[in-house]
Length: 509
Image 1 (cartoon, one colour):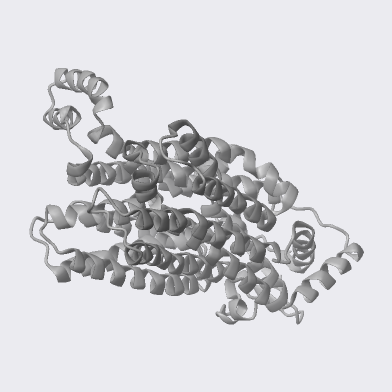
Image 2 (image 1 turned 90 degrees about the vertical axis):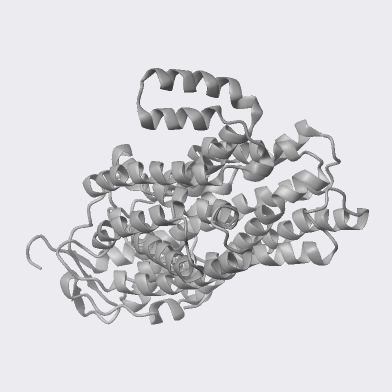
């Protein structure tokens, strides 16, 4: 499966009359499918952000134990990507391939998330490891089949782009809530409105609301963050929102109609007896490997940047009070800008739009390198630029994986969307290793966050590591993704041939 093969196929498409594609999905169906991203991301965002501090300060666990538990949990998460995507692609039954995993996995996800955010007072190291493994496994059990279903709901390109962008908006919204809770409970600038709300809650004379009122009236500081309260609120919101989002998903995102695919050899493969799906469909898809390399660099650059972001703002730009507000602002800008991206994807194609959107934060990072300390206005503007495309960068890789899976379906006859989605998820988690490398290098060059004053050499090294290095990683990723050969015209050609091979069955299967 080379670039030449794809190009040759695209040229052959001029002799293939385009077949009618699905009509665009209505906004309600897109909303109902996409809303599930909100609770899934909100729960996962709390684990690396707040769990280590809470478990070490309140439960007395050492950072070494928490680090090992998190590492083992992440390894289990990688194993679950491989396993769940394989099983999802090979699931047979009257309820489809994806929906049973999402529906049955949701209660397990909620239970493990609740236990993780509200653990018992005495938690042993072994219990911590088991809890981390269970949470990540159950989370992936829901996430991978859910993401794989996006390309199966519709083959309309504009609808797929809208699904992708709305999922990205919900993803940002879920990620912003824990940070907003931090800002709400520790920043003294919010104390007056908090007191007014607390007084109103006390007039309702309910025990649970009195407790919430006490939390709102609490005055804290960044060095003494109430992590337990933050995790409890996150858990409660997730438990309330997830069933509602699941109900919308079940109602508005049904499995596609039964279909039989005619493979390359001409043999009919009925949906109920579809050929066994194996990882060979991914291993042979060399054009997909090219995108994976680019995505690893893009995601590594972004996570590298996030790992050093608080230190850059605090020690290089000398604006420690801007850390949480800047993060909230950048996420808000990402949500506001997201609706403008579907047309960009429709014009450029998903892969080229991904490369373009990855170049925007790279430019912002390079500009931040030259930014002197004590410039809050320019700092805010640059961080708005850097965060504007974070939402589609999080979700577009999964849509591009679906495009690559359609190419694999044309070549192999195996409908391996879940496997392609799982491999993308796996590479993103491997890119998280970059955060450890960023922190290690900063320490190697003499930076110590426990000291308020660091040497000029250490601060200079931190400036380079937190801006130019992630920008370089993003640039390399952009170049790799630009070479991805499945452009929009070629994808249309692939879909046209696939439609000619497809026999819709209404009760005949």
